[in-house]
Image (cartoon, rainbow, N blue to C red; front, side, top):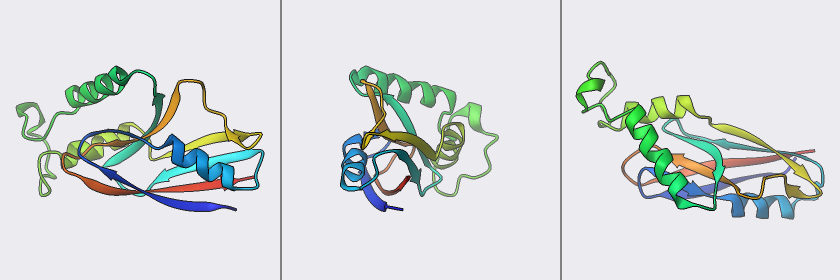
Amino acid sequence: MPQKIISLATQGQGLYEFTHEASAFVRTCAVTEGLLTVFVRHTSCSLIIQENADPDVQQDLRAFFTRLVPPSSDPSMRWIVHTAEGPDDMPAHIKAALTQVSIGIPVISGRLALGTWQGIYLFEHRDRPHRREVVLHLGA
């Protein structure tokens, strides 16, 4: 089964598209029908499939999650105990728990079966830059 680990550099909270890298991996494999499993090896970021045509979607998603789970320095979050790594750390874990760390995408005729406006994103929940590892696994 073909596998690859890709490394994504983030510059703080936001969505980082890597559809091109995942599609390129699938094209290099001799699998025409199967399932691409995408897995992120971290607990303070997540994966989503989302619209990749209008950047306002990304901005609105980030704003929504910030309102839903503000930093632990916000008075509404004073119940948080895990604060050793900064006010963005535990909220990042909560956001990751609300989304997903693994996504399965069908492969049909050697291509990802994504919709016209769908892209694969790493959703970074931490404030500072990170290097994130994403595992791609193509099963037949």
